[in-house]
Image (spheres, rainbow, N blue to C red):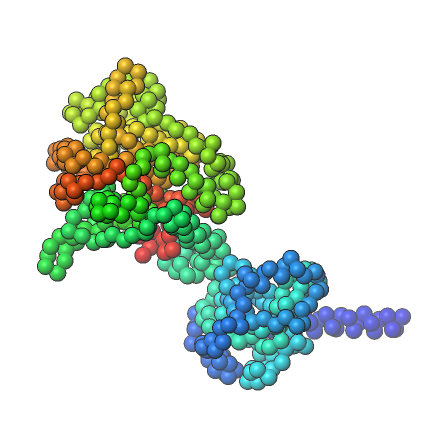
Length: 535
């Protein structure tokens, strides 16, 4: 009985001492001297411990990325150890768990993959840095620090892949502030984006997916023999889009504008003999901020001579399928409940779809005042809010959004053959719907998840027709105040006079595409530093 009581007291004493030890080390870790509000205090701790910080990396060849080490997951069983396999890893501390004063578990990551470090006094030697005794490690390390650790690979009894440290980890770069485990404040998330990326792994994943998608787009066009090009961002005139530009002045007080779209520049390269080209880059439009719009945005535009709309419809299907496979490993966008296999794409004609929704004929569609008044009557009768500048083009666009697009499914849908008045840079043709003949553009838009992600058309290559279309748009600018109407570009018309071969142009909004493939609802979530509001 006495032996049993002594045994119980011994066990209790051991557990109490271990618990007290852990508590004591946790207090050391969170003592006031290390307060996140006082970065200098933490630097004093390093000086007191004679612990080197901010060292240079002397040897980089021996450092193994964590993603490569994760391949051991399928090769090792629980409790396996590879004592002859020594690795050096670097990463940021995500979590620290204290088993005792002599055993610490640290999770590190060098991006998204994480790896556990098992640091036991029994396994490490202090010879690499005698100035730091093992007993002071818990004072030195904190969530957010970058460290380097060397050891052998193995798995714990629970199957957790670990590096078993054979040397005391080296501090590479300490975090002098308290790194949050979760950051929900929207203002702070975007004002300190670097903290958001560490605290919220989903944010980091969305950005990695963004650049993965951009790589997919670039590789797709390159393997299809397109040449990547660059065009001016800043010039003395703007064009290529119905949008309001950012205007500034040069040193000589000459007006300059940021690019709204690269279209006119790219078509001039096609005229010059570059028949298969694309550009991935920034554009700027002096418009408002909302969930899907930012004044600075990324787009991809491609131009290919001797092709038609069908060529790019087929290419678009293949491109989206490749992106989906690369990002999600299948053709399914599960958060939308849609598939991107070629049979899932549907096609709607612009005018018949709108007329069916309105249950009435639109009659002749042109830039006349009579057509504008007819459309305004429809808005009043159906109590639909008018656009700010009620031009025929804007009225048709708003009416289609309200009557057709809001009823679309999330599946991929091509909208084809917009009225000519809506596409001043596209070739036109006459199509008969019922008893009425309409002048429409050879154009398509692609909607996915009810968002427009792609726009393409066969380019107007007749300089006389292009000049007439430019001039027709000036009524909207001068009489109706439409600042988005394109200004006649005499230089571009002159370029067309040298001969633009039959060409199809294609453009895709990269930011919205990333939103769709990552399931984000706001554009600032897929921009590295958020929308303009936070920059």
